[in-house]
Image 1 (cartoon, rainbow, N blue to C red):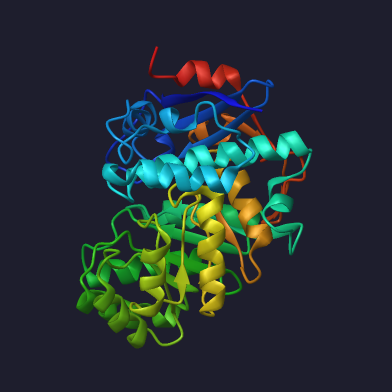
Image 2 (cartoon, rainbow, N blue to C red; image 1 turned 60 degrees about the vertical axis):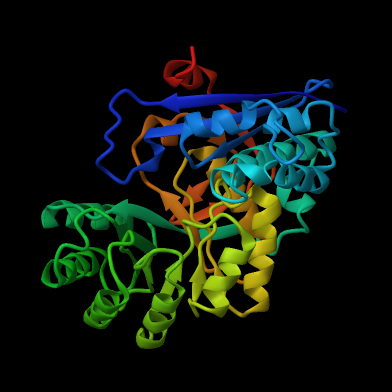
Length: 374
């Protein structure tokens, strides 16, 4: 089997609002085509047109090549070797960041091909599953209106979710305002539900420490993304001051060394690689194994379409110690209608896909409706 093409499809909904933290208002899908008619699908959580450029760029020299140029003619079953070829071939595109995010989409698609070719789900190819289902947390945004937040929290608890996250929005404006947000969230979900707080990186270390102390009485399971990802000294100070509240971060990162530094230097409790940013299943498996070696939690971030939902569930299946994974409740049609995933969700628990490959089927009508390159 040989790769014949790497197709990039940017998508965008017409009502795109750049002022809200909803990353599934646009998307970029990658399809890897083969000469045996098997096609793999993946996606990247990045700027769609920039990913398209990384894939389609012409070769400048051996360490500065587009991913299509690297892959066409290769055997797609050699996934980990191809991952190294992509890493080496894109070193002059920035080493990490968008190059790694583009690699993530392609890597997802390659594993999808292998699974389809061997009639196995991806989690079997990655080493075997510890579980066939996993708890997921409903991931929503803070809003200006306490009544709206209360309604949202109660809705997801009513649907059976035992963990709910609120994030971004107005958090970071004032200490009193932030405390009110967390208090409202806790009252909305009740005392028996795990409450997760995502700050969206608005703070310096001193302010974050002030918040983590003020939030303590509301018992958040974790305090996420309080600082910029490279503020390792700040994370160390925050982690040491946080008491029983776990400090979580990592969705900004895309390479294993950055995640390891967050653990060894930042002393965080939870790292949050995103399979559509951090090099795909190949690199995220390594990241999860590293976290396990350091006795830290690895809980995957996921805020894209059903493609990422499926890839994340496969990674969750092979991760030994993981309490839950993110499940975005965005109403975007790219989240709800773009892809059918071979999973069921009941009472906040999702089944691990058992279909060959990722277990994803694209809705071609939705692809055509929101495609931006034609």
